[in-house]
Length: 140
Image (cartoon, rainbow, N blue to C red; front, side, top):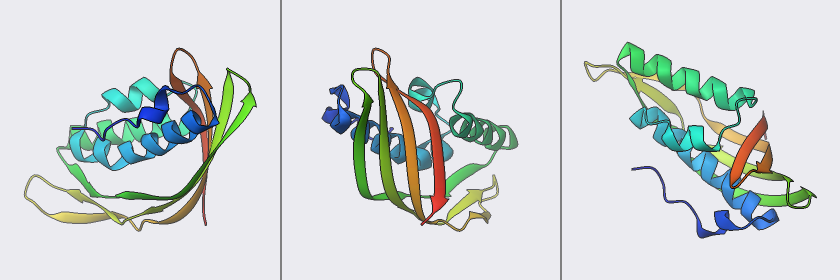
């Protein structure tokens, strides 16, 4: 089951943008562990390069018969910003990500990422619901 959507995501506001961005990153370990891209795709703009790269990575893992493990995300801070009222928003997050692994069919755990602390800027739009348009992430 994907993480539960926060109620604040129904708000077309800076608070809603912050909740949507936080939820989007809560989905990250879930999509790699499950291969289920339903919620990720519902929130991802076709023009979001980061979003599409994650999609391709999950599809690649599924095709190779491996699943992701770890990569849990802890949100240290999240601030929403209203850029163009009712239309364009942003959110600035500081997150800590646990190390990640690929688990093969044989149960072998192969390190896949070190994790770390990241500063993330998320560009969002409201199109009858939240859509992630772009993500810029850097180690913090």
